[in-house]
Image (cartoon, rainbow, N blue to C red; front, side, top):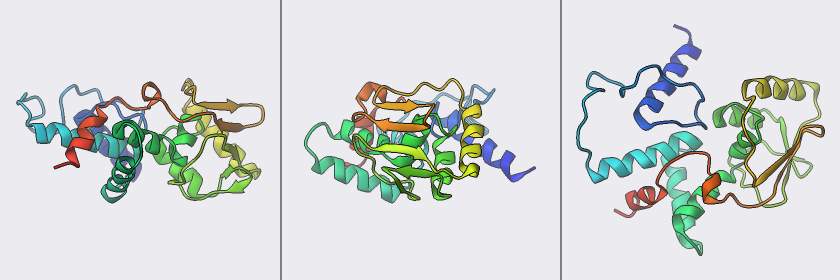
Length: 203
């Protein structure tokens, strides 16, 4: 089995366990049950497990590790406002997520690779850090190299039909996106209860 197929199967196992994760993959599994020998067994879940799954869902969708997620939670707690909503806004404003939500790549994972290879420019400055925190009024464009343009066109074919959320704007003629506002709760790209994540880290 090729490495690509193995990676795809691994991601599908995650989505079977946690539900839809558009930032991880748009592919869906034909299996209705969760992975493993006892995937069809329905058991009453503990509160700890429910919170753990919410945390894992957030981690896998946005592609952040445990240490990074803890850092985002800590920053959200120090900010004024709803801790859960601020946490989601911090994740939504990551450059890799913005590139994905603009429809330039089929997943956040692909966006991360795209950024790391120097294909993205923010406010006329090339940024190769996927975790770069975007701000309102930032302009995100494609590097002028022919290869960058070809890569984008290929990715856009894969992500065709993806709707750009209203907190972003994308000009297809200029191949340039703009962050118009902070993401509102209903515009977040994954369905979950963020309060469960905050509760998980409050133990």
